[in-house]
Length: 287
Image (cartoon, rainbow, N blue to C red; front, side, top):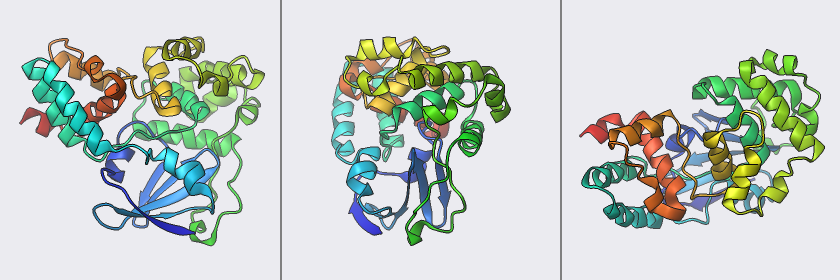
């Protein structure tokens, strides 16, 4: 089925390039998005109108929360412009430029298990390499997504992200064969913990932030950045601002000033604007 929605502040290309998603394919027909066992296509019709091709019943259950459609990002950016006044003059100017550069970004709400595994894989890899490794993992251990509507046919065989049970069949060497390298034991430990129930991701959703982060960091290879990424993109904790190499460079650029705490519940959203601006809009930041 196809539906049409109106959304302000949604730039599909920027979201795809924002470092938070690894199963997003673009073509002339729009953006094909694979999330867990769900598949949908979204195509921009004009400035704020989008056509979505999806399974019946998937909009409220999957698509709306995934795209964070309940949040008014124009209001968020306005609020962040005001909060930036608390920063130094250099910090204020930098954040203002990043907020403009990143207009259209949204925080995707993705599956926590998929986020845990993919961000473990992401360490010291660029986005294309991460996506290739993730697709290899899905092809090797996931299962084909079946019973798609006619409108989504013709994409070839697409595999769901493997469940913990499916991934539990992979040895560490099997995982290395999926181009995971030194990350293979990290993924193996995460899978074993989730499959055995020692790490109950559903139960974690009810924990306060610090307890959630502490539980995630018990997994081999999960440091502060990966834990914050999983919290932000898998659990919707928008007050978490992961510090990767791009964010570290931004903080260095500000003379060591970490701008994110002043944004409180919006810190993670601002982090995405800064990440995108640092990686893709350097000329704008230097202007």
